[in-house]
Amino acid sequence: MVRTFVASLVVMLVAATTAHAETYRLNYEAAVLGVVVLGEASYEVTATPTRYAVRANLRTAGAARLFDQTEITATSTGAIAGAAINWTSYDISHAYSGKFRRTQLARGASGVTSTIAPTYRDMGAPPASQAQRNGSYDPLTGVFALGRQIGVARACRGSVLVFDGRQHYRLAVSPRAETTFSGGGYSGPALHCNFRYEPIAGFSSNFDPSRVPAAEAWFALPEQPGFAAPLRIQVPTPVGAAQLDIRGYQRS
Image (cartoon, rainbow, N blue to C red; front, side, top):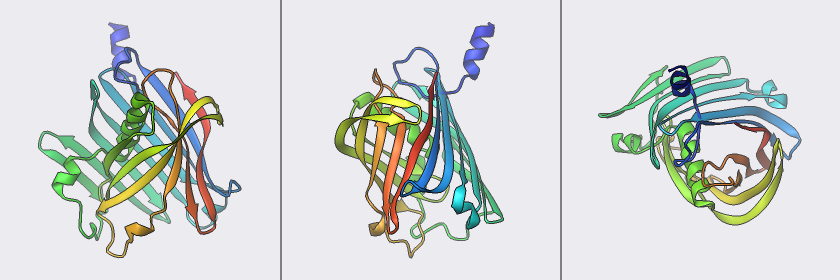
């Protein structure tokens, strides 16, 4: 009875065929040119064969705090049924420049509902439709789902649709190379992928999607088909490459 109760509380992200709970604790650092630190982030996911939960944190650090003090905390929960991932709740608190916004999303039989305080003055042009909201993952589950697609395929292959309360977009990968990666607590085989962020709806009218740069991403290649944890994301900017790098990798 005690073992069953504890197992029901475990949170994590795991392959659909895994018969036990598994947890990934991932910590990252964001920097430009590998020198100017912009921020720190964490992503922790735990899953059993039937449930999963994710929590994440992001905050500005280093020189970036002189210009913008931002902290984000978020959680997501849902169910796993074979290869399907069905998220049920998403909650994010965003503190920035002396302001604060909380977004809560819930997904039920009637679709996705949202509670946002304070509300956005502009929901984008065009705003995300109800059908687009219903057909999307929340942002944290989107990372989990994309990592599972890559890990099960054992290749840079997969895409997910995401809705964050306002913006609706697609995350997608395509092949570059199979390689090795060493750093941040991970040493082993990895996949080097093209990584695309494709805006769809819910963006300001003056947003130009054609100016979104092409990115690259590295994912840990699991020993067995399962979750491929993101290790690095690299995006070109006018002042040099911005990079999100793994600084702590734990799997249990």
